[in-house]
Image 1: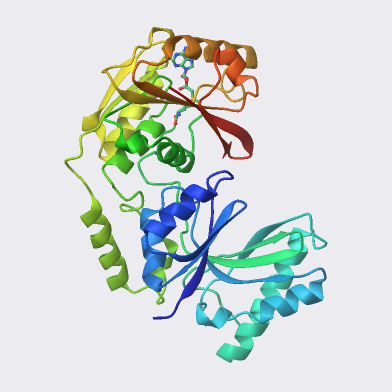
Image 2: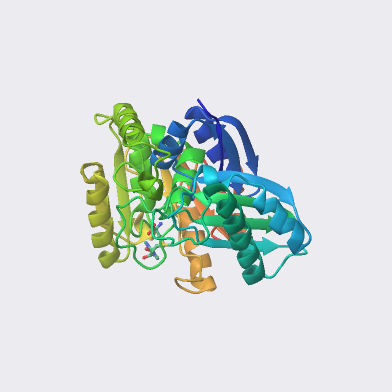
Amino acid sequence: MEQLQFCAPCLFGSEGILADELKRMGASDVRAQNGRVLFCGEVSLLARANLRCRTAERIGLLLGQFRATSFDQLFEGVKALPWERFIGKTDRFPVKGWSLQSALHSIPDCQSIIKKAIVERLRRTHRVTWFEETGALYRVQFTILKDEVTLLIDTSGVGLHKRGYRQNAGGAPIKETLAAAIVDVTRARLSPIVSDPCCGSGTLLIEAALAAKRIAPGIGRRFVSMEWPLVSYEIWEEERRLAKEQERPDQQIDLYGSDIDTEVLQIARQNAHKAGVAAHVHWNAADLTTFKPQGERGIVLCNPPYGERLLDVREAQRIIRELGRVFVPDCGWQYAVISPDEKFEELFGRPAKKRRKLYNGMLRCQLYLFD
Ligand SMILES: C[S@@+](CC[C@H](N)C(=O)[O-])C[C@H]1O[C@@H](n2cnc3c(N)ncnc32)[C@H](O)[C@@H]1O
């Protein structure tokens, strides 16, 4: 079977987590880079990675990488890649991308040169002069970082963080892929009890439940590459069957979500219901100052307000002080809090056992872990 090369962008800080996920799926030659993971595998891996990856933003087919500091080099480099292997005579191939710290910095110019080079290549290989672009969608994505060009064709379509359970999100929801990274780092999927006293729309708890029950996050959604001849219907069906086989419907996990905002709890309830994990969660309207862990052993995951989208910085810092008070040490519970506040440990009142850098979008945060 032919080996394909892939590139999966991810949030900064979660590259190692995604690399491990992909290795567990059978990917070979897995290389974690800044904000992305490169890997190889057969075409079935394209379907598997889309269905199962919890921390990838999307899965791209990696067409090639080369250095370019002039438009000529960019044109020739793009034209040399085997676009005809994937894009057919009538297919659509819009081009989008970004450039950072590179000689080629004008995005519209790069975009149009890349489009021209692909057209030139396909004209020769498909022997047509005009591309009507009415067929399946092959979204071309370029990145130019320090003059190194990377070209991908997106296989996912809508970003992989859209699992399909969160139509409603409340004021400042955490991205599903970041929540999944936190669940992975803390090994919350192995904990019998998981609690979130600032649960908002419930994302951390829902991702913990999906991971514990081994429900593939993409099992209920569609991907743009389902329209491509490259990946047959049989491959998708087989990969869906294998993903279903991994599920653990009887896995016990008790989840406790509370928030001061009663409206957001309604949203959390709906989301858990859509995700198929509602039976595991106990929701409760409460101020975190009254938080008490339920049971002898468990883990708290918490994404408190940062003072950016919700509340002001002073109020956000007051909440961190409260967390330090209610998250009682050495009582059988572990606590994981994600925050961008550099004074977090000082405000919390004790040093973290471990810290891990994780980006919430472009915002640099740390995940602080306490016993
Ligand atoms: C950043 S949001 C959490 C988002 C959540 N992770 C999600 O995915 O939707 C912070 C949450 O803390 C809640 N909150 C603010 N002050 C609180 C307090 N004193 N007690 C409990 N919850 C509080 C807000 O209502 C908000 O839902």
